[in-house]
Structure formats: structure tokens, C-alpha cells
Amino acid sequence: MHSYDTVTEALQDLAARGYSANFNLLPDCIECKEHSLIIHPEDFEIDEVYRFEGMNDPGDNEVLYAISSTDHKVKGVLLDAYGTYADAISEVMLDKLKFVR
Image (tube, rainbow, N blue to C red):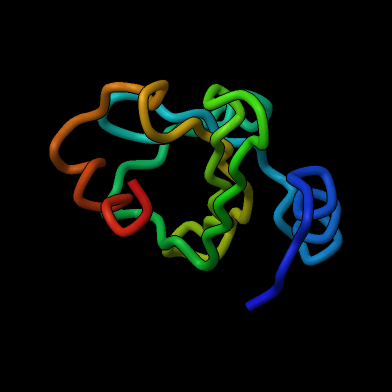
């Protein structure tokens, strides 16, 4: 597992390691608009997770997921807020992401 001081540093290293897709969190899946992909919880694995906490603003609390599709064709990142500003997601997605939420 790597250690990063900033989100930018983590994103750059993950991109260099092949995590090139940018995922968005939807209530019951993740999507990559650039590749027109929708991936459901049973079709992806979370390879690495990094938490970043803002020094002055709770709105800066973020979690970064390095994600691979189970068929190993797509690797990417999902950057999401946690805590007060976390998005509402389904029970299935909550279970998939639960160890950091």
C-alpha cells in the first residue's frame, strides 16, 4: 500500500500505474462517462483506498478508491466525499464501500 500526502499526488501515481478511468458514484453503480461504462458492484473490485482529511474545512474530507473491473479490462479511480457530505447510495453500494464510509 502506498502513502500520499495529497489527493493530487495519489491521482498522479495511480494514473502512472494504469488507473486511467475516472469513475462517478451513482446510487447503485459507478460510471465512467469518457468510456460510456456503467459498472455494478458485483463487477468491480476495490484495489486500494486512501482517505484525505481537510485541515480547516470538513468539506475537504475525501476518500479515493483505486478500482478494477472484475474482467480486468478497466482500471480507474473514484474520488468521493465522506462524512457529512457523502452522497446517498444504495444498500448494495454501501456494503461494497463500507470499510471506509
